[in-house]
Image (cartoon, rainbow, N blue to C red; front, side):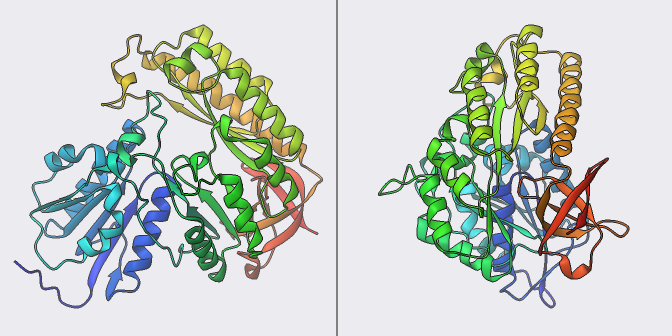
Length: 439
């Protein structure tokens, strides 16, 4: 059966989750932009809906199901493409939602997604999942535009070999796979030519970049290669495990003004017993040493930390160890998440699950600590002069952008300054960042 549409197909896309998903959706949009289609808002009626799902938390899975139902209500006759991590690990759950035609595209087949989306044949049910655990190559995706953003995400790695006991991602993304250095450079050059002033190197496990390549490489070598291209770009690294922040990497960051003084380091717990149960491969003392060495080598560095609260077996002592460790360290901000069961992970079957009330109380305490850490970090930079990459005009009259060490700054200026690097003095704390003045 063929679908005959009048005029160009209307395509709607919605994306949940991480920077890698954002990059992959930008690749879909880049390819669709070369076809005779009309891109429309996801909230309206479309001929094809593409949902790039997330499964990292129970909430993300629920949001994925909600978007599927929304698309089915908007146009039950539409071609529905569901991809991403939730599609990979919960295909049957998706099928149970839908009594309408549906196509499921796994993470290892995303390079075929546009072809599947635009196929003329009717879709009763298509499963393009593949064997993600056996995937050896990273999906070849190229992004020619990252939309209206001023900061482009540059995906250089996919998959994860770590198998933390709470995490579904290795089952959804497969083993670690790296993009060849020449292809990374080619994508970076495309972004630079499009006028993006900042590129964020990202992956599912960024610190494992290059270990699967022949010859082997690593993140520091890749960063050095990018810097050697002398593109008019500043680079930022996304999340890195504490054991992957090496002296060599810190040295390169310290030497190059094009690499932003910014590190995001997942801690998850500050208690050694809980870290072992999580299958994290470092003790709390190692994390503390990495933070302190990073501050010594990069005095202006912003250090963000992920914390997972209420993991099975976390008693009051374990939580206090986490709180005290973070409180004692010069970190800049926290991302605090309550633990939620992910079916199929070892932690979901562990005894000593923490009651929700205890998790909520601990999350609130750490989010209050986050507020104090952020304010102290912003306060310590008042009076300094920084380059701001201007992202947008806020509601009202102020421009808004970020320093290299990721302080949000608002200031008066012209619209022509959007997507430009502007030198600003940081003058005053505000409720959501810092107020500055152009120098």
